Length: 347
Ligand SMILES: Cc1cc2nc3c(=O)[nH]c(=O)nc-3n(C[C@H](O)[C@H](O)[C@H](O)COP(=O)(O)O)c2cc1C
Image 1 (cartoon, rainbow, N blue to C red):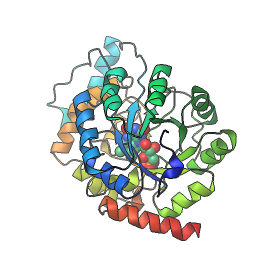
Image 2: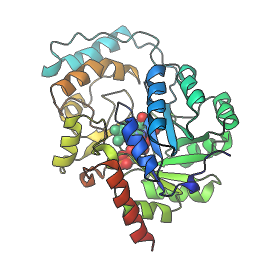
Image 3: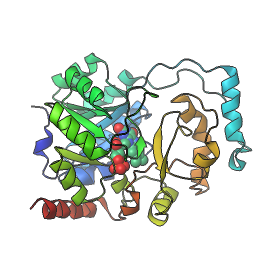
């Protein structure tokens, strides 16, 4: 039998978050506390995926989720666009001395190669962002009793996910931090708030719905469940945990800049994603950028330099709209607090 969301003792999923945030210690602490711990393996090498899954499995016998991006083919951008995108970044003082070159194919990792360690380690859950994986992948997961979930930002995507045979849908509201999981990068986006999307999907679909976006407290989780969700997926709430691999500047900005607010930008990766407003986002507004994920490759040296300099103004500070309620503590303690808050609101 594949894992079922209603078997979670605490109906909380620590969201998959790419970029080294989801350490084995974080994932295992959440799983040990009765929730579902997730890895965000978006761009990770197969060896790293294998190492992380193995390390987490040594720390917990609880459920683990391995999450991947579904990359779409992308044509090579024109030389002119490459030059414009590079010039826009070089304009920033921190980038003056960086040697930036246009990304070369292959522009993104091969999903089948990345999934090899997953078939070996067999985590309880496999989730996908940015669309549906090939039917063969869903079939293989089913054969191995791995439950599959896919992000939906609107009803049409939810219906397609159910029709493809996935086990659950992650309803990502507009409050969510990180990349918008729309199937098409630049589709017209309804931008439904989390609770409205959860209500719509849970009344229209037969498969369970997970709520994601702006949920920071157990009270928020209880509201999501009341709206029809089977579980709640929290990302930003876990960013400031001791075990989170978020950079020190990322954690510092989340905890000390409650009035900054968030914004959507294409400028870091080429796809819309929500994070704390910073100088990079402001400066890149309206500037040319490469398509996803080439812009991510292009901005990598700048983002790495910013992390080295502890400079929160030039790295991606992905965060949901509830970030001012982030609580710095270890993940086990946070799970206990959340569990208590959920119980208070449900009873
Ligand atoms: C730092 C960060 C990185 C993220 N990376 C991923 C990812 O790799 N895969 C994915 O499916 N979702 C990713 N997300 C989105 C989360 O799965 C989830 O939708 C979101 O965190 C929920 O909103 P919240 O941050 O307000 O809790 C990311 C979110 C954040 C904040």
